[in-house]
Amino acid sequence: MSVLSYLKRLPPQAWLPIRNALPWMLLAAVLDGLAGLALIPLLLAWFEGAAGNAQAALWLLLGLTLLQAVAGYVAQRRGYLAGAGLAAGLVGGLLNHLPRLPLGRQRHLDGLVRGPVFASMGIPAHLLAPVVSAVVTPLVVVIGLFAFAPLLALLLLLAYLPLFGLLRWAGQRSLALEQQRQAIDREAGTLLQAFAEQQALMRSSVASGPAQAALNEALQRQHRLTRALNRRTLPASLGFAAAVQLVFAAMLGGGVLAVAAGQLPGALLVAVLVLLVRFIEPLTQLAHLDQALRMAWQALAQVLEVLALPTLHSPQPGLQPQDASLAAHALNCYGEHGEHLLKDLDLHCTPGSFTAIVGPSGAGKSTLLALLGRAMDPQGGQVRLGQVDIRELSAPTLAAHLAQVHQDGSLFAGSLAWNVAMANPQATAAQLQQAAEAAGLDEVVASLAQGWHSEVGPGGALLSGGQRQRVGLARALLGDAPVLLLDEPTASLDARSAARVKRSLRALAGQRTLVLASHDPQLVCDAEQILVLEAGRITGCGNHERLLATHPWYAQFAG
Image 1 (cartoon, helix red, strand yellow):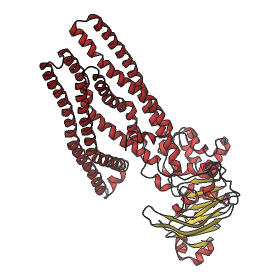
Image 2: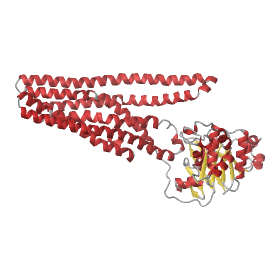
Image 3: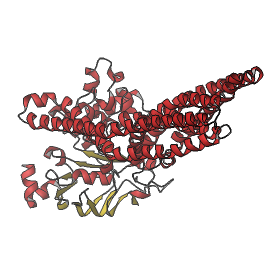
Image 4: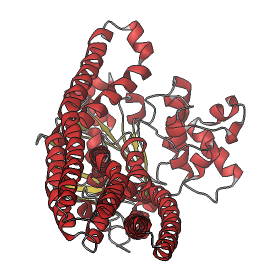
């Protein structure tokens, strides 16, 4: 894929700073070449003893050098700004894009900002200007030489073609290995992070051996690929540098023969050689710059691939729900490998009702909740919120009418109060406290040194799993969404806190439409409607008493 094709795929806010920096990079490279060409009339006038011409040529050289210095400074400054702008644009694009990805697409995106986005910053900040200079400046010199030594200029131009062909061949030769190395780098990084985070488990588990073996194998593959990449790229890089030096040597030898034959003035040959020596180094570095730029483009491509993933379409302004009912009809959902997760599933929850979903692990409870909350769309059937297809609701409308509490309870870095109040920023302190008491969060607030002002850390890392779950539940209770979806709301809570949450949920009867999935018989027994889900199908529906009498799995579950 070409550079332009990558740039065209950038979000506008990321492409604009690069577009503003590129002209200055090109201008600086052109002025650098023109300043080099100004050496030729200066040296010719010096050897010929023409003081007037030498002075004029010197002023031309100084003027072009000054202009190049100014353009180079602006190009460098704009390159740094473009790097920051590229990162900001990519992060902004991800922030807008990731929440709209279906649930299955949101996996394996950890470290996207830390790795590929930061690596992409180096393209305009550190790599683009040197590459532009290494390509454009010598080309300007060659074109300018036609005014002084057409034959030498033609020979140089013809020599440049195989040089860049060699560079392209070397890049294509190592591309596959570079992509494999980046993939194993990501795998090794993920394993290393998991290994570091699970040290307590590793020390107490006999399973630490296989985990450590997997990490060691990944690191060994990383080492082998790095060595293979070096073996493949080093000869190509050295070959390119040798080819550049060979061109220079050929020009030197041919020029000496031309001078000896009287076909070329000696002063002009000296001037051309001085000029070539000035620009030989950027060309020899082009192979290394090309490899660094290519790897940075690959990092950028990872981000662009995520930004190109199809999202859940939400119309604007969309329709409005007519009530607080929630229904599903003929739902069918398939996994990544084509397995049937939900099969022809029907569900109806009247406004203000309490529905519980139970079933063995892997039965599809979390998948069903994800479909009901539109974390993903079904491959067949439809979900209706307030008698309206959920796909016809805008994202703000859906968020205003339906709140979800997930089992993992991830939070945003910030204060405890801010994380809870996200559901209702205008909530009073009394409302905040009431929601905390209903979710059992008040005990957490009292135990923290700074109370409501305590920081929760990135993802809520400074809180335990149960504390994060209470925060999520308090947030949902603080909001006024008429429909609540809860996934194992008491799974990480102690018995006392779980009992408080159960009482709070019972108190919502008739006020909000409540749908929850749980393995706790004491939590679901009060539900007006209990659905038993097995292997993606509803095998039982009714209240607690009816299912106890008619459904063997539920009778065993509740007993």
